[in-house]
Image 1: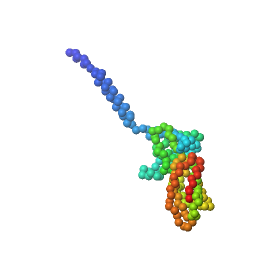
Image 2: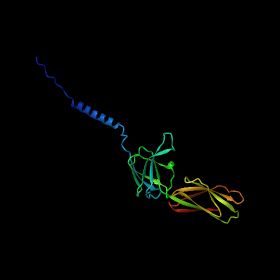
Image 3: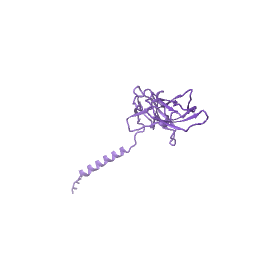
Image 4: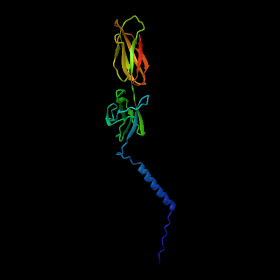
Length: 220
């Protein structure tokens, strides 16, 4: 007796669905794989002067990272670079730094690490800014008062200095640095020759352009 040959019926639709499902699962697994930690994450950018967009050339660039996970004020420099004549810089690997910090020459303000910029990893080319330095000259303007003064105490409201400045009749002016293109505020108090002092008075002013000088009179 001869055995009858077995007939294998292939369901093409079912097979194609299985193949499609297999490929789909492979794609999902590949997308779930973590990125290669050894792949450099670079940063490109321009350093410019705030308000004018002029390039800041030959500035020192630092990428910072917290020393520990519990500190918000102590940082260490992971990477250092320098801008070219166009204010441009390229850093091939940021080593997962979180903050950008730049220091220019004496024409620009160094606000310290507390005013650093957060790095936006999603942006390919980023713009960063420094404040240009302007100078404000405060001077006594005599309006013909009768009571002689001993001096005028200036309390600048600025992150640049917490120093107390005093204006005298013999030296009736004082020049201090301020942020270019930024509003500022001072407080002053008049000291009279008889040993008394007047009330603390507030004076608002807007700086001149960076590297310029603005005269702010104090009328007595």
